[in-house]
Image (tube, rainbow, N blue to C red):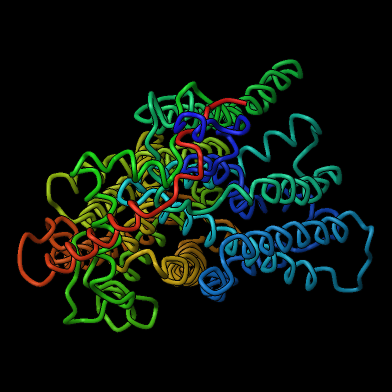
Length: 588
């Protein structure tokens, strides 16, 4: 009988069936290893004392990591050519191996005549490895979640932002030491182990499921315990909890006892592992891809949804050449780097990012000197850094849902760049004023604005230029604007203004609100230019968002092609032998 044919030969565990949610959970742990690149300040005091480096030498080692951002764009091409899995494995091994060798040199296991040169080469190596993982992870997420990508990408980017804080707190709570103690250099080996164990085991889960698997139909759910509408909310709550715990630990770290450190350690570990709860199997019955198409054949609307996507995709080539018929849901600007860089819009994106990253990187680079030089009540550098880190993590997390509101109201998403630039300008305007409240308020607003640009960038590039070459397109912007702004704004401009306001009798230390005031003013003016670029981009991109929202054709040549595709699909469905099970049970 038909029921006996459909009886499954053996139970099948839904947690082994890849879905976009498996990719998202794995991406949180894998992408965390990319954020370890921001951990150099954790070991720089100990490195300076151990080798007797001058501050200029330490700054040179740190700057080598930033300059590497200029040459990370080939990692995106590697993803598009060799695939995400290969690139993630290679990037994780390079990242881990670089930190391992860095730790061997720092701890004296490997002795060199010129250690500064070797260390300055290993940090860029780790940066390139992390960039390869970044390109692969976020290209998978951009493709796996389709037009619902903004929330998952924002969550994953928030984990990248909080990664250095998580790693530092876990290491210091287990191996307490002073900032300049030799024991602190063991942190390099901790990062090497984390880059391997936190990435390589989860790489197989990071993949783009087939169309039938990406949106499986399930009786009573899609096979996972937590309802789909609650999953992003659950991960958002976990991420906020992780940000708050890590930020609070950084603020009060010197005041807590050993037992409190133990509690913090276990809370952070629990929060870090809790995304796995999303993959707990439920009790639904998952339909296989073939049976799903057959079971929906009675519902005309459902069948047309499955067919229309494939038939529509055949109407134009992958390059999206101008003049070709653009199907619903696809951008008329779709293409790879060569097509993208022919448009002025690509350079508007670059200039907008340059403005925003200049405002954020000035603070991440100089917060210690800024807090030390200001008048009024003293604010410690640790407090300012923790404030910036927590707020930029929240900015990464919340900009996705907020930008979706803008898009649902039929506004192009690049208008969110306009808001971010305005907030960054307001932040540096506040920092011009003396006092504790303007300092912390400006740092908090700048952190929110700076954090928001990272998920916005990926989502906007995917919408404007498509996802077929998203890795190559994204990596053109991931490192270069930040590297240029770090060198010319955060270092050269800030240093020139600082030295110009240093009194002759104060040596090389500047005291007073004037030490960075002109820099803040110039950055506020730079955000005006960023707003102009973002407004131009938003106006020009309206044609893209109109094409994305365009309904399916109802007549003409395209409709005849769609109908032909439907008939071909029906014939394949009717002729397919019923050899497989109709449904598979959920649960291990």
